[in-house]
Amino acid sequence: MKISIITVCYNSSKTIEKTIVSVANQTYKDLEFIIVDGDSKDNTIEIVKKHESVISNWISEQDNGLYDAMNKGISMATGDLIGILNSDDTFNSATVIEEIFAFHQENNIDASVGNIIQHKEDGSIVRLYSSKNWSPEKLSIGFMPPHPSIFFKKELFSKFGYYDLNFKIGADYELITRFFLKNNICWKFSGITTTAMLVGGLSSSGASSYKLITKEIQKALQMNRITFSPFKIKMRFFWKIIGFLKK
Image 1 (cartoon, rainbow, N blue to C red):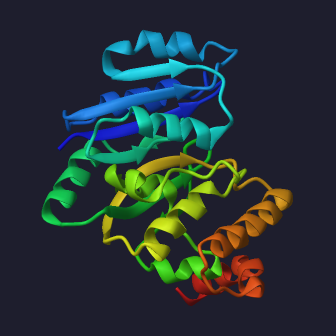
Image 2: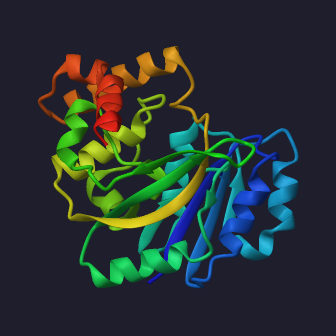
């Protein structure tokens, strides 16, 4: 089973090398690594070229944002499974892809969802973001599994479509809603902590971002004809706190 890892980047010279090395260190060898760069102006491409021996394919050209770049990477991929690794993130261990392979071999599923670790620049862990108690129905109240922990069969994108470029920061939410809830794909919680994610991503950076993603979550659910409560989605932060206190 070939597994394709896609990393999209733009001016990522401070972090991209750690990302590349974490892929190069994977023990699983039937691995395709694709980098899609948005025409970086720093020395990102020099770093990519330095590691070309472990990169299966890469391009550097202008794009229409993060999700356009992801779509390009998916189109380039030739693997059976697709995973996304952000350009400021790393795999949590050298055996992550080997574990993903074994899990998909043991289970006849379209996708697996797992866990990620969120950490600060100094390496201190902020949170274990787990999918253990997640179910697709929770999308209707504003909860999604950690995107980097999901590994999809590539054929799903041909069947159900790619990331919708009409979203600024919520295209991953819409795609997960479309795959898991609208089309009821077969999935399973892997329990694998796939990724160490640097805190401060595109959809986790302040009040204005919270307002935008709230709006885009509702848009994603409306597009896919999912019944939802706007109030519950707006208040999802408080449900998270309540859930944490119960634990």
